[in-house]
Amino acid sequence: MRYTEPHIPPGPMPSTPRSRFVPARLRRGFTTIELLVVLAIIAVLAGLTFPFARSLFFKNDLSLSADQVNTALNRARTLALEGMRGDSWGYSVEHGVIFKGASYAMREPAFDESLGIVGGVAVSGIPEVTFRHIEGAPSATGSIILTNLQGDTVVVEILGSGIAYDPSDGVEVCTTDDAGQPQTLLIAQSLLQIHLAQGDTLGPCPTSEESSVSGGSSASGGGGSSGGGGGGGSSSVPYTSLLGMVLLSSSTPGSLTLSGNARLTVSPGGGAQINSANAAAVKLSGNAVLTIPTLNVGGTPGTSVSGNAVLNGTVLNGASPVPDPLASVPVPTPSATPFPKATVNGNNVRTLDPGTYNGGIAVSGNAQVTLNPGVYYLDGGLSVSGNGRLTGSDVMIYCTDGVFKLSGNGIVSLSNRTVGPYAGVTFFQERTSTQNVQITGNGNLDLHGIFYARDAGFTLSGNGTSDVVGTALVGSSLTMSGNGAFTVQ
Image: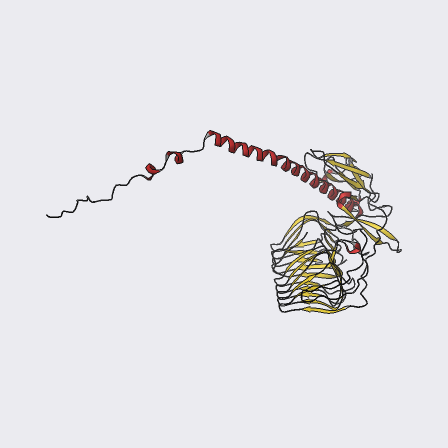
């Protein structure tokens, strides 16, 4: 028998559509019930989130309006104090206009500056305030009340000195006057401007107990031992709400200088007071960017912006200089039995106790150092370099000989004291020291609290992209360069 192969016609084999093998139950779309369930879920989520978003929107309008009123009143008072155009200046809250003249009705419209409040915010209380030429005395004292659509209110008070402030946005600081008598200053967070003149009474000065640093034993190799950290202190917290920058140099050009690709951001609610009366007290060049809600500067015009530099924020020039807001912070007393210098390098890990360190603290290599809560008196400064890491919470570091220096790839993460006279303060450099605080290289700084170096400057030239240099900086000057991005928040 001969075997004959079956004949297969040329061309591709006929295929059966895949859909023929997909069950009909898997090819159908959404049912009406499923669509209704989805729509019901969307409606419930919208109902839950809309009231919250609406409330947030109204609160933001109120906060913005309060800032506008404060800014406008202080601007009008500054113009009056400077004797600008030989006349009084005022602000009409009702019309949202800074005006020249004895009243809004008698103003010279050619000099009007518009700075109104957000629509939907109602105003009651004092409708307008005029500040007397040269003297700055207000035509009225009392309250301006702002109310949003959901009934929230902010009260802006006008003191006898003519200064306006939001009581919920201020912090009292105790200091002494020229005669050595205690007096209380009020600082408004939004402008960082001293808000006290003769005749304004804001309450008694706080008292405190924590002003000495007791000694103790150093804890090495991860071990711990007893040590002091300053006494238990008063619950009074005089500076914890200070936000932004205060640069105290009176005449320096470029008291605040940004160059290269430097970026400095002061978070909303903060501001800066630049005491320098130089015409270029603030200098921005290159591709530098300064973002700040309010910039009070003593010079006129006070700012110099060149190249591709950008200044984002409200500038109020000709501002009166302010005294050191932390002048009353007591200097800690060194302990009778100090520790030797703490030098931690290599791959060592150590925990340090509060107290006095003769020679300071130096962290380098890949070392890791943790600071226990308390007050540290460093007679020799603080340095973190290489890949060193320094961390600690509820600490205050005082440097008497030497400075704070962060370089290389070092990491510093510190938070401020929460009790006693140093509450709110993280770093305090000897007031008469003129050695600049130095933050360079690729190190990362995450410092929460006030960075205080009265007669010294801050030199920031790192390449970090998210360095936090404190909730406030108080010093002589600040210079930024390089590619770093720093935030005061």
